[in-house]
Amino acid sequence: MIVAEKKPMEEIIEEVKGYNKILIAGCNECVTVCEAGGKKEVQVLASALRMYFMNQGKEIKIDEVTLERQCDHEYLEEIRNIIDQYDAVLSLACGVGVQFMAEKYFTTPILPGVNTCFLGATEERGFWTERCQACGQCILARTGGICPVSRCAKRLLNGPCGGSTKGKCEIDSNVDCAWQLIIDRLKALGRLEQDYEKLTPIKDWSTDRAGGPRKVVREDVRI
Amino acid sequence: MSETKTPSKLEKILSSGQLAVTSECGPPRGSDPEVIRKKAQMIKDHVDAINITDNQTSVTRLCSLAACIHLKLMGLEPVLQMVVRDRNRIALQSDILGAASFDIHNILCLSGDHQKFGDNPQGQNVFDIDSMQLIQTVRLMRDEGKFLGGDDIARPPKMFVGAAANPFADPFEIRVPRLAKKVAAGAEFIQTQCIYNVDRFKEWLKGVVDRGLHEKVYILAGVTPFKSAGMAKYMKNRVPGMDVPDELVKRMSGVPKEKQPEEGLSICVETIEQLKEVEGVSGFHIMAIEWEEKVPEIVERSGLYPRPSVGE
Ligand code: SF4
Ligand code: SF4
Image (cartoon, rainbow over all chains, first blue to last red; front, top):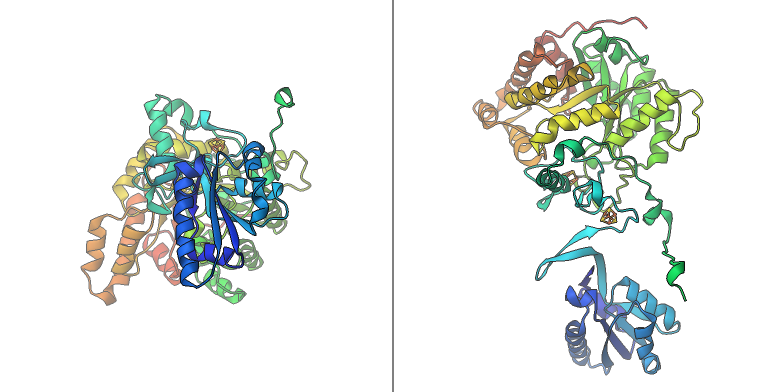
């Protein structure tokens, strides 16, 4: 899923302080799972903002809504009949949702309420870690199912570097060295000897961010 | 390995079977070329080639290529260190050609420390290719006369291709396979991480020799003298991938402060002495960090002086 984090309150206040009627829009998908922008977070943020502006002696209308998804036309349409009641929308969806809403409601300012961080997994409640950088050409089959692109600080395809120490990465002793994980897994799969010394060729990064904005087209399913 | 493939003086000495000695100079954090010339001047008669580090520990410095050119203009033999952290494949190939245009004949292909350690931790890193792939790139450019994109190079670079090896990093079990991989990628010489744990180094080297890798690649054992007990402790505790045995820290702390530099030099000389005759060691890489003036003494005390002269 896409993992996001709440923006600091001061930053949000800075974003919204010029508006009088604000809709806070949550999203029921990834940001709900990572507890950054679901219904609950919308409620908490709305109350905090109401409180803040009340203390400032400022009358502000703050409403709440949580859509099934903000990256889908269908669900975004659900606010079409109310959008004109607001000066701005504070979206707690990931960057995709914020932008998709902005494209749809072209004349309404849509502000981000979270920092979109990475594609990751829930290790345990309250702890999420990165697993993928959407490079567009998955090489997990040759790296024991562990992604060096997202999990090695130097995205080495032929690691580890000389800084790997006791299973941890040179950048931080709390971060696993991806290549230690790869080697451990190859060993568990009984493939260390045959696979480790195979040189991974230079990667084609044109399917990554480097190639410019990407799209996926499926003619067979298009209407 | 006796036939040479490049005009590199370092390659000539190694292929003649003599122990080679290299050292390194870190370029200044400014644009004064005198700094680099002075350092080179101190060591030039005692080493066969001089590595120029490439923004080591990710701290911004005068570039390795320019510093190598300064050495070249002094008639010395530089080893261009090149990290893949800061440049993509276009810039790397371009700098290789730039170096080749000055007849710089040695290159050391490295990953580079993460930028987190340097003066711009908020910067991007590149890592378009990795150090193994940089080795392959230089070999492709040299041996096939081709760019990565497939086009021909007019006047291909003639570089003796090196890589680093850290026998002490984890996981230890893949340290020999990793060297084999670098050799397969095309590395012709290796400069190792600083050796303090001689036993562990020998264990690694035995694995290297057992696989016959020492016949395919020249291994220069890396040494760095401690200037103080504090430095020994720092290297032990703070530098990733460094293996400093407790005895050495104790030995350094056991002598009065003013005697510590002397003790550090002695440890360094002893390490060289212990490794000189070991099968698989083809030479030494002396990294006297901001202590270049001591390199001649280390070389002389280790019995590695005078340096051989080789015909052009
Ligand atoms: S290799 Fe690419 S697609 Fe596969 S997990 Fe890593 S970043 Fe994602
Ligand atoms: S220590 Fe491991 S994860 Fe960290 S940069 Fe080196 S190889 Fe990558």
